[in-house]
Structures are given as C-alpha cells and as structure tokens.
Length: 231
Image 1: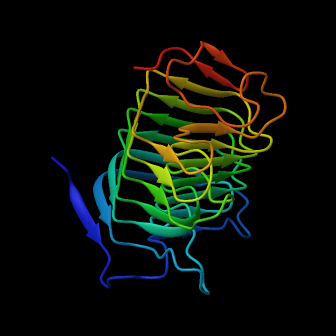
Image 2 (image 1 turned 90 degrees about the vertical axis):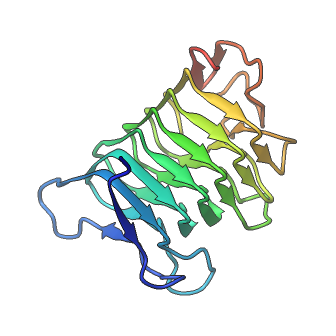
C-alpha cells in the first residue's frame, strides 16, 4: 500500500519536515525514509524565513535514502520537496513520486548544488513547476548545479514546467558533469525559455547542447548528458 501519511498541520507551514545542517558533526549520518506519503509542507513565498525543500533540506554531509515515498502538494523557494546543498555523501531515490510540487525560484521538486553521487531510480515527476516568471527560474522537476555523477534511470517526467526560465523538466547548470539519463521518458514538459525545452544545459563543455535543447529524438551522446535510451 501507500504506507503511512505525514501531513502538515497548517495549510502553509514555513519549515521543512526534516532539516539537517551537519554543524559540529564529525561523522556522516544516514537518513532512511520508506513507505510513506508526505504532503502539504513548505512555502514558496519570497519572505523570511525562506523554505528550501518543503520535505527534506540537507546542507551538510548526510547519506539520504528514500524508498517508496510519495511527495504531494509540497512547496519551497529552492526545491519544492527536496533541497540538497554541499553534501559530499550519497543520495538515492528509489520509487519516489513527486506530484503537484512547486518551487518559487529553482528546482520544482529537487534542488541540487555541489552535491555529487545522486541516483534517481524508478521515480515519477508529475505536474512539478517553478512558479516565478524569470529566466533564472530553472528546472521544473530537477535543478542541478556543481553536481557530478547525477544518474536518472527508469524515471518519467510529465507536465513539469518553468514559468519563465529553462529546463521544463531538468536543468543542468555550471560544473555539472557525469550526468546519465537511461530508459526514462519526457512528456509535455515546458520551459518558457527555449520553447518547450525539457532538458537544458548551460555548460560550454557540452558539444551538443550549446544553450538549450529538447529531448525528443535525441542522439545517444549529448556531451555532459549520456543517454542510453529514451522511451
């Protein structure tokens, strides 16, 4: 079944459900969450204090393992459901669903910065969005900058969008490399800049994607994105 449900007690709570900074920690802990539905946490409002990651916010070394988790109706200024920054540990999302997730600025569902070793497997992103109408508002589902080793496998992106920026589904920013997308599908995702752009890459090292590109009928190699097969 869907497992237990954790819902916010107020209609627009400010804080994340779980937040970890790593301050003063000598060891690297592991957060494991499975078989649970999380709904209603966070805020996408541009007011202090900002919410980064309505469900989970990690800004230090912490292994994160999510298995059979559903995020619904989550909000955050950066990362509507999950925010990960400066995390040298590992992150694995297995069979995780993101539905109706909104961020105010970047990363409709997930925001990644300076956080390598991220795996997204067998997951779904549906109706995730970046709400702010700006060209800097990027990654309707996933926004990744400075994050090497992002792997997306058997995952679907549908009806995700940015209201003013790039990457209706996925945005890959500066110093993001070693990205692979395998056996995954993209449908009806819209980036306001670049005309229906589903994946955009802002790296001069990418020989194929110089500015922005779609993922329809793509070749097998796209520079920093390696795609085995797209359904």
